[in-house]
Amino acid sequence: MTVEPSKNPLVARLRLLTGLSDTELKAVEDACSNVSRLPADTNVIREGDPADRVHVLLDGWAYRYRDLADGRRQIVALLLPGDVCDLDALYARRLPYGVSTVTRCRVAALTHPTLLELTSAQVGISRALTWLAIAENMVLTEWNVCLGRRSAREHLAHLLCELLVRLSIVGRAEPNGYDIPLSQEKLAEVLGLTSVHVNRTLQGLRASQLIKLESQRLTILDWPALKAAADFRSAYLQAGSSHAISG
Amino acid sequence: MTVEPSKNPLVARLRLLTGLSDTELKAVEDACSNVSRLPADTNVIREGDPADRVHVLLDGWAYRYRDLADGRRQIVALLLPGDVCDLDALYARRLPYGVSTVTRCRVAALTHPTLLELTSAQVGISRALTWLAIAENMVLTEWNVCLGRRSAREHLAHLLCELLVRLSIVGRAEPNGYDIPLSQEKLAEVLGLTSVHVNRTLQGLRASQLIKLESQRLTILDWPALKAAADFRSAYLQAGSSHAISG
DNA sequence: CGAAGTGTTGAAGGGTTTCAAGCATAGTGG
DNA sequence: CCACTATGCTTGAAACCCTTCAACACTTCG
Image (cartoon, rainbow over all chains, first blue to last red):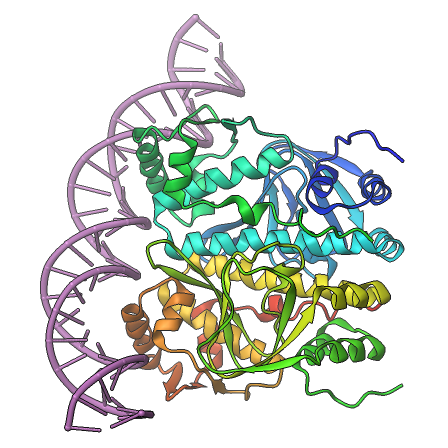
């Protein structure tokens, strides 16, 4: 049985990294049929919302964030096409974070019963869910390292590297650059810095001839040097190809 | 069918938080029969080790860490009884981090085939794996917030709160305190600070009459005030009780 | 008793924040 | 077409949290 290449970026990721069968991939694709379009800069879900469905980002950029009482905000995940916005909704009564769009987005909603049915029918899909959670884990772990031990310059360079690899996996990047719709303010909320310092750090990377960044377009001028500045290893983003997880 | 209360802290966690059936809990317990004992301060796995099995911590404290080229180290997870040390081993060829013991530990090793068999036979166990990954996710997310946006004092207070709740779930804490075998150096590696600053921050919490900490024993003198100082909400650690995930 | 690890303290330095202002760009309405 | 406004980017100077370096005290243990 052959299936023509899907436009669904989640399917693309699962095909590339997990070895799911065509039948299972088709089932995932079918499950993503309830699609809605959201404008830029709007809430997908708010912190504390009841968790009765899971959202898959099909197109556009979004982010997961937590706000503190005094207004400080930390972005805890950048969501790209093919990412699940709120996996925790599977087991949490209410979500401990909010999700908002950066650009216009297409989002598929999968209800709890739909997912139960899917995972019961095919073990591979159940394993794919575990894989998705673990893939997120690895990104979160790397962010922990960046936030805890890396300088602003290293951290920013690392983020730009991570985004290149993740976007490439779902066909949203060219070899030497990509469109990045984040303001310096948003970058600051990701990096745990102020936008002022992000600005200066960005200038540092530009001055070193590592990157060019203008009008929301990042060009990587020296990939080896950027990777070195970040101490970046891409392995953690590409795990899964080793063991097939199909049922 | 009734099962007498298990000494296995992973079973305790799954029973309390996920609603797995007794049969499934028994299967998990049986799978943890290959136990080894490790002395304090030794490697469970090293960064880059081949990932052919998964380790479950049955007793003692351990931690997951990443080292940078110049010697900086970030601890990316504190592992308590009932925690899985290296879930990523399920899908990664090599582990992107190391795991070491803090105290003497008892650790169960589950080989890849064992796990495949378990998850194929019982959907509930497959879902439990996803739940475990998501539970880790929530902790990692909260650490991101702490590292990115909270002050040293808030962060330290938050960690002490988190540990009380997590230890309580597996019966390793009293209502107002617990044994904490971490040196200030280790705390610093968790918090992304220096041990000097951890020392001063700890003194601040003592001076405010929030905690007492001597000879590896933490006593919480004012739980509401400590929670307030940390802006701590325990919900993220107790998710799962809402939806049963049994197969 | 000496050695090693852990906790404590002081003083100086640095990376990042804060505050404040100025500039550019894009969209809006008169 | 041109104010006018809003938003984001840039820059400077001062302040602050945390680090660095260095020294000393305490405990444990061979």
